[in-house]
Amino acid sequence: MSTARRTLSFGDEAGIAARFPEHFRPNWINRAKLIGGLTLAAAIFVFGLIRLEIPFDRLFSGIGRLIEFLGLMLPPDPGSWQLAQVYLHAMGETLAIAFLGTLGGALLAFPVSFLAARNVLRIRPLQLLTRRLLDMVRGVDTLIWALIWVGVVGLGPFAGILAVMCSDFGNFGKLFSEAFEAADNKPIEGVKATGGSHVHSVRFGLLPQVVPILASQLLYFFESNTRSATIIGIVGAGGIGLQLTEQIRVLEWQKVSFLILMILITVASIDWISSKLRFAIIGRKAVA
Amino acid sequence: MQAAVTELPEPQLRALADHYDAAVAEKRRRLALGGAILIAAIAAAAWMGEVDLVKLAENFWRFPSYFISIAPKLALATLWTDINEWFWGIKRWTGLLLDTILIAYVGTLLGALAGFALCFLASANLVRSRALVFVTRRFLEFCRTVPEIVFALLFVLAFGLGPLPGVLAIAIHTAGALGKLFAEVVENIDDKPLEGVVSSGGDWFEMVRFAVVPQVLSNFVSYALLRFEINVRGAAVMGFVGAGGIGQDLIEAVRKFYYSDVSAILLLIIVTVMAIDYFTEGVRRRLIGQERR
Image 1 (tube, rainbow over the protein chains, first blue to last red):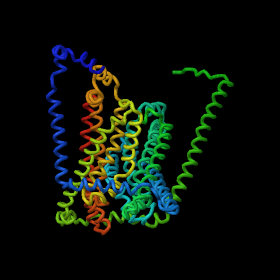
Image 2 (tube, chains in turn blue, orange):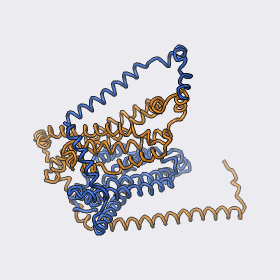
Image 3 (cartoon, helix red, strand yellow):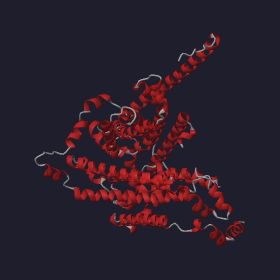
Image 4 (cartoon, rainbow over the protein chains, first blue to last red):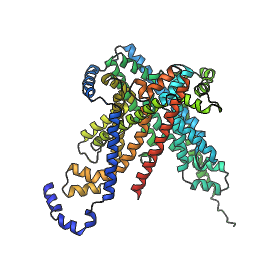
């Protein structure tokens, strides 16, 4: 059938081309841009492969070994009920790290985002300064923060909470201030027109608009922090990452797969809960 | 201007006021309930996470003092030599930074290509078979849920130390993350070009090539650039588990208390990340601007 359609559509291709020459003329500038861009991307890629000295011979033997590991991982097995309880506790720690870290980061970032937003305090130099500060905080990965906090409060989940808090402080500061700036100006003008002060206009014109957005961002970050909190145990900052790295190092593959499975299930259920909550807060449309 | 505000009769007003009070009370009740749940959750999490405010208060001085101790000792008189001494390893570090960026780049490109190939199979508007969509989506979810560092740990064991495991770990994670975002873009496209290609006899691949790709490509590139930015940060810590880049030197400096090295490397990472943020944001603005025109 599609052949029939095809003959029907393209039977008079020459005729169509003659009637609409502008649609058949190749656009050389666009084409040159595209080819140039692709060549550049490919060139950097090849340069990367050469400079990083990617060993292609090891690629195949490595894949073989991965498949071997995968075979050893089945079936997932925590070993004993005691160990399963230890892992569950570690998972709980991970959730606690993500939850308190996100919340604390948001609480710290909220006042600072007032400074960073263009339309709230309107002190230009302070605004630029806070923005650069937030950029710097964001430039440091959660794992590096964890490394620093382990030095301050010692090993354990508390260091993880503080680390997630720090890196979220940077993210939230930026996102919150952007949310403030994207807010509709009309309610603010409305409050001012009825005689409200600037503080009033922020409280009654701006905040009600942005609070749902902030709440949804908070939930979204809780989701993504659950993922990152699963790994900060690698540097000793608590949570399931510690168990996971240990089991990988001693090649206990069945325990590794059990732990990974636990992470997958937990993250999936947190995703599910938080997306339900987010839709409840700001409606299905706005999230997409 | 004096305009008389007509007041409603008392019973009608009473009903409205009661209704308002009830609505406000309902809202307050919900807020209180939410607050109580939140506080309970905080308490549970604090207990679970071994939050110890006393320990924090006692040791908090270490936090600023850490930054003070990693700060370089610079004197105005010998500024140049001091800076030279501070960045004594600049040659090695810039090389490692370049490696880090390339790990992120190669990983992002590979992951984006994989995500590109998979996203069409994960889009319900292009693929009839619900099973195929479901399987592809779960696969992408698996790729992005397992943290890249965990993949890196596994790959270091399989492929040996070096940048290869880092590249692969980033590629897999990126494929999962971008595949999902790409599929969301594809599901929101305009159907008419698809129908056009199909009605003139195109097969599935022609439909994707001529009806879908032109609509989504600029969005895809923009997302891939955003991911590249994130991956540069990720690649900076890949060295923590021996998967190449500058992370190895950083964790060594932290563990061995080479204070001025820590600040030098951190500063280099921050500057690099900021520069890449700035660069990709510029490119993305241009891309999106092009689309609007």
